[in-house]
Image (spheres, rainbow, N blue to C red):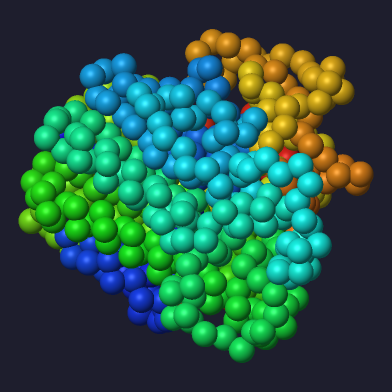
Length: 500
């Protein structure tokens, strides 16, 4: 058995033709893959954003109830390491610079080997002691002037083959050329694109002309939409260009599968960590606002050679990110650890049966959200303070920094959780604002923090808030059950006003 896992970042489900008939973005290669694979129509996120989602992917377990953005913990069982220790070679090729920051530093080490493409986004890549900031700022919209590293990095990407996504897929072809005749390997092809910055070569941008005539504007601020009509069009066009580029390079991978008939013995899986708001609900991006469907409801497409007779079939089962890890282990006939709460999707490929009634997802310190596939409910604390909120960890680092000495001086030890292998964990107060509001990892508070109910079948755009107390009660009961199974901290139930 061999498997290729294509993990993209911030792919809005509605941007690709497989999931949306209304998109103006042509994605012929995603559509081409659709004709060979099974398409999951009710696939959702778990923990958010980027690195918490990857911890879910590695461990098959929800982690946002206990921890913000952070590394794999010593007690976490990671699927590429399980593979590595059981005769399956695991390799990752990525330009995701967060893996090399303090808060993500334990992920790539779990694979048998890894390759990093440098220069993506704010990767601290090129050493320029005195960059010409006046020159750089003149080229970029003023809202992007704080992205110093990105402006520097982009100066070193003048040819298409120097962009990150082309490099990632070129390295993937090298791996395949070296190993296509060998059995028992797993390849993860991970592109930061189409995550912002929306930086694609000119030939892709020309497909989406706008009336904008200002400096480079390709990185929306995580905030409410405040831009002019022309600026909004430019940002959306740049995202579309980037999705189109990713689609084309994914097509080169499909070409390789065709050329060497890898379809006969190699699985191919495509998904993303989360979606992205492109002005929907009057918001850009993610993190601050409620986890609307544009963020939470994500694509998943799976090709497995044993199920090629089901090419093009659509799966309605309710699935989420934590199901990926046990699925990969099941592909290779490896035992699934007892701590895993996700479900292998191998049986779902055989028969589209229900594997869960509901699932939870969210950001640490914000709402606990739940969907049963028909309704989605955002459950916020009545007061959005950091009271009764703690981080549990043995690896005290966040996105790009270690916990401060002051934070560590106030730590205590918790009792073990079910998944911590009998270990007590550090119990620490979270990062907060001057008003004791919990802060998202990039220093931003949460907004629109009112509990809300939507019917996502009749109202997929979530524009009509419902008042159905009995539905809420049923979803709350499910939420309590799922939080209990995840061994959520006791104070988390209190914080969300849930009686467990």
